[in-house]
Image (cartoon, rainbow, N blue to C red; front, side):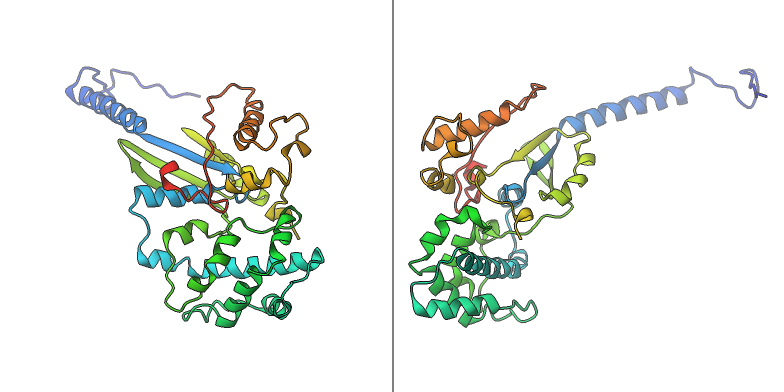
Length: 316
């Protein structure tokens, strides 16, 4: 059974030449044209990579460069994160020392090691800064002569790249009046869960940058982000070719220092560049380009790092 409507029906007459129809047609055309112009000025960038490869640091850099940086209130929000980074890293060092059977040279640092391991960070009692005793313990242990030997075996345990920076700055950070600066924020490590979007302008472009969780448990959330993506930035930490991942455990300065101690050819026998950091970096970039069987446009770039973190804004 069907329904037919005659074009001669007085109630359903359609005048294709009416001014109203033309106006609607023009309006639709104008909207399509405006949308096309708008989309040409929009850029959707997806940040991908493993945990601690630098994705969130790039987002922070975009805020500093394109959004006038962080307000005092925003900086203060990182305070507890930085405290946690310091305590977690100090405890990781102590656990590694015991696992590797490397004891402190200075007797007092044995006692300090116990204090560090037993310390529990109270998130409700840090308006006055870090506990002065734990600050002294971390500073003393960090300067113990055994520490270089521990760090030489850094591939055997997980330690965040910015741990050394925070240990060097622990006295300043422990003060009651401490307010994180932008370098502290760039160094701070927070596990990215889910998807976060950052919007900013760069010239005539309106950029939407999406940071997604790098841990394997987060990767199932990536797929729907690929719709209408303009560019993908895939981040890789060059210095982690011999390291365990955070999600599996229990960048250039670091890479350069590591090459003589942990030869790249140990993991990639076909590599023949020795300890030359540029040759090693180019080799790793070449390995990625060999996976580009679809011949997509790739623009590889590597950045100088400070404690493994891309803190140099002029390179971003």
